[in-house]
Length: 204
Image 1 (cartoon, rainbow, N blue to C red):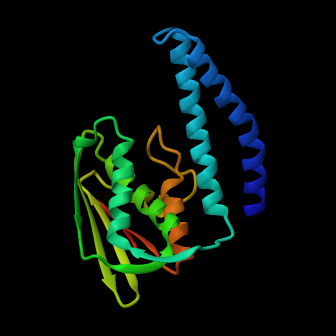
Image 2 (image 1 turned 30 degrees about the vertical axis):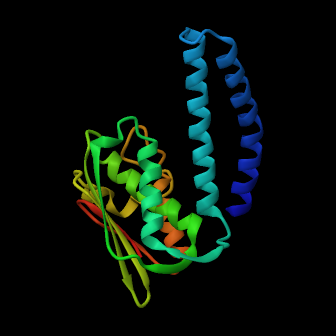
Image 3 (image 1 turned 120 degrees about the vertical axis):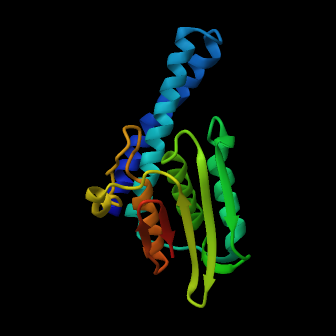
């Protein structure tokens, strides 16, 4: 699966970069508020979405190489939360509560941050009109548990068993890769992803 994903990513990214480049040229050459500019912007948004799917697919199917380093888990959580909010048009809609001590852990910093970022993004998506999101860091002798809780409607019981399957999603605009990637990151570190519906996910 990893070899296939790598080959697909290579073959897709080459024409994808060409599409992105031509869309950027159109944006520069067209009038700022013209129909052509709007179409070019939509093309770039589509390219970015495809790139995100390809990157997630590689993350899920990868061989599991970890670049382990020592870092502060709470600082990483803050970075992940700030990254999610920076992508939202109205970030003030969500009230973020970060709690827990400054715990030092050894893990792949980039992968863990990506996992936390996906959990926080899911918490925001579950409350499209805004709401509270709590991220708690709980250190233990075995490592760290990061809990993300929201006030959304939760996952329907019929979807619980499939919610972490790649490409499975309950949202029309979703890709179904986020939780699958989170689960993969947890497994690579010898941990687990636990869903406690209606409103929380734990990365241990």
